Image (cartoon, rainbow, N blue to C red; front, top):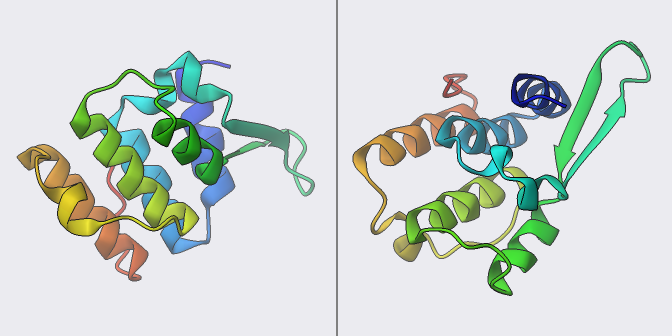
Length: 127
């Protein structure tokens, strides 16, 4: 599956659930994680039951964070923080907000704010 196909399938799989849309969108616009082969094992893809030509994908957020906590990903502290924030929004995974937002750059703060607005019903999904 190409990166654009994966992104489309993840967006389609999250569609209609604002918090899931927001967390998935945050991860996609951040850009690092979906392109990583070691992360893709946490992405599950299936055909839509209502439209078999549409692929839907979802992320096993809990398993991804468990792997992150176990040190299975080599990544920067900012990348780890963005994964935790996305997982918190989309997968209801607890995050220590003070630690998670400390040290992310201005671009990522902007993406996070847009994602939070989207999750609250103000559909401004970062793209």
